[in-house]
Length: 60
Image 1 (cartoon, rainbow, N blue to C red):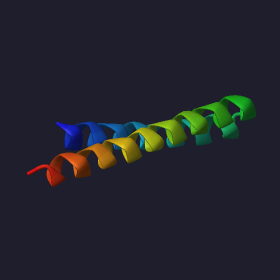
Image 2 (image 1 turned 30 degrees about the vertical axis):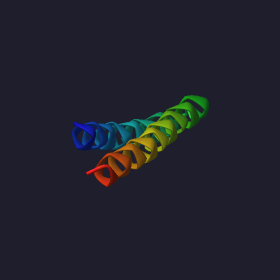
Image 3 (image 1 turned 45 degrees about the vertical axis):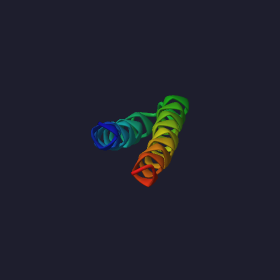
């Protein structure tokens, strides 16, 4: 299940980055920064999910 969450988050990260570029191009610089920050937080969540996944595999 964790691997699914990570993959799902990766698709969101890519989408966020694409929309941030569009927002920046249209002059919405603050919104673009906020969207990139959201992408960063999802990347951070994936770091924690990867740690959890590693921890679960070490139990077996």
